[in-house]
Amino acid sequence: MPSEKKKNDTQKEVIMLSYKDLQVKKGDPEWEDGIKCIKAYQSQATVLSLADQEEMRYLIQRLDYVIPPSAKKAPSSHKLMRAHKKSVQQGEAPSWPIFIILKTLYNRNLPEKYIHCIRGTFNTTVLSDHTEEYFAIDSTEPAEPAATEEDHPKSPWKDKVPGNKAKISKETKKRDASAFGIQDGSSSAIKRIKMMGAGNLFLPVTETNNQGRRDSFAPHAQLANAVSEQQTAKEGRYKRTIEKVKEMIDKKLEAMQDALEKKIEEKFAAAQEDLERKEKEKSEVQTKELQSVMSEAVKLHGEAVMRLAEIAWQRPAAPQDADV
Image 1: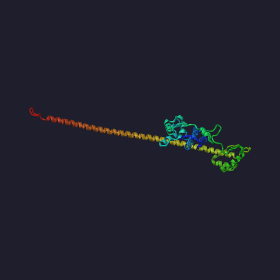
Image 2: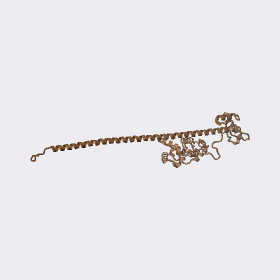
Image 3: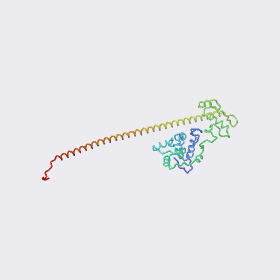
Image 4: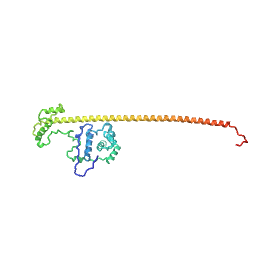
């Protein structure tokens, strides 16, 4: 839900989000829309509640923003729009983070009914840009990598202070070697990396320290970094596969629901038609019975008239001089 901006110096907690949190890489079909959603998050994070920040970050990391082919020109078919409809039907308030993502993806093509629902709940559908406030916070990162930057961060073992590089390199190697359970320069590093899943991977390294000597820990660091990237890529593929399976299940459930509704409608129509037929037959029977009764009544009336006529004919005439 959009928060009112406070006019004090108290800095609210803001969750950081960048391209490094995406479960896809540059070049994947989900990349561009993912970057759009991250930029939208960065423009709104400083005015979102912590709960809304967590929800929007969760939706983006789960790739819930991905537009399936069936929803490219039909926003109502998007997964997040279906989630909105379900929550409203259950009496829950609509989600502001979902609105931010859907507006980022579809802009002016969102259904008018949905826009009215959001405006009626939050009194606005305007997304003001607060990107500068977001990047004014320390440790923020851009939404997407620079042209010369890789999709993933560099190895965490690389020295960061050039003024005392030799000393830090030595201490860093010892600290990071202990973290992996290896000793600097030992062959057990390669075995441990293989156990972690690197296989026969080999990367030629020519890094040196500031004294011109070859850095013996660099190959291990590069291999560990490669393993980490491989695992990240596998996790991304697994998650995409799971999302595709979930999407297929959702489609099948929708198809089953449509088929069930159609069957119910057919049964209802058949029952209504049968009821109308029975009512018609009943009406016809009643009409025939009424006609039979009326026919019998006419017959009885005719017989009564004839009998009266016979009686009148048989009655003797009165004398002319008689007092009547």
